[in-house]
Image (tube, rainbow, N blue to C red; front, top):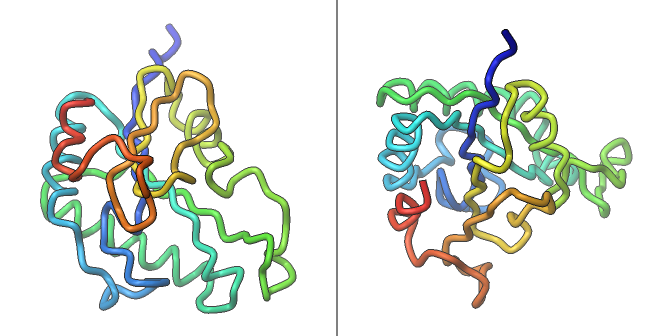
Length: 174
């Protein structure tokens, strides 16, 4: 019998899970948004897979490496685990159209708002996008996939394009 498709909560990293402090790439740079923990715990209890999706232009701009990103994500996964929350996976885009590192100056399908990271996670974990949500803090976190709902939390980037004033309000969408 084939696996039943699962639902997922796709979560932006910088600005949702942690404060957006400008290219954080080491544990000492991370200041967690404490509201992210109860939201993730509630989502997991309702059967959502927790998948972090994040643009990491700092790689393309030469500020840090992909290994730095992977190492930070491993550490973050451990911090969630300490709180009894299992993050299913981290997906990141290291590309930027104006990259100073030539190998990352590509027109990719993974840089949000393009859907590449979510499409890959859907394949990797058999996810039903119509039952899933994306949570972000920028208009670019509204992913261009029909049937996938995006919730933008008010931030300095959102202008008037937001759905929730605070991260804690996102619980009502689960």
